[in-house]
Length: 159
Image 1 (tube, helix red, strand yellow):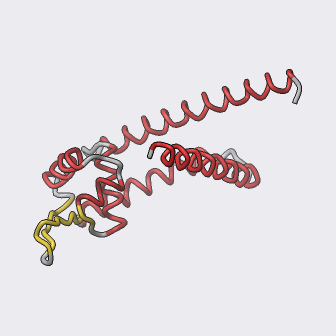
Image 2 (cartoon, rainbow, N blue to C red; image 1 turned 90 degrees about the vertical axis):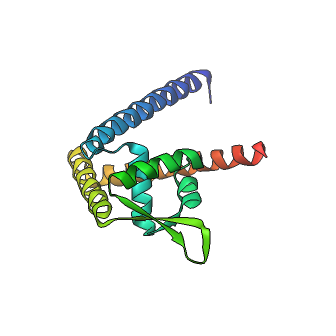
């Protein structure tokens, strides 16, 4: 690679980085606006979506899955319980373990949010040809795999 190609590659990488950060920021802002209509926050929704998928989970499992510490997750679940979106139940075999179970209201909320998000995404991709969309998906999968490898390597060097 000559000097000109190296400069152009660096410029393209900077532009891609800027675009990814901007897209991420816009997507999170839009999603936060949407879920705020339901009176919940992004961490609360992520916890709810995980619980709906699992049907029930222990508090420590929920904290790990959502990358929150136990104290933070307790506060999240407290608020969701006040909103009648989850119930806590003790494990009959081990009373120290508390299961968190989504209510039917939570299941409906998660389904409604996912449906609205899917409709928005479909609108955003209306101008894409099928081939472009498939290429974008392939490129994003490559980027995701690269990021996961990098994260794994960082985690293994932290130990």
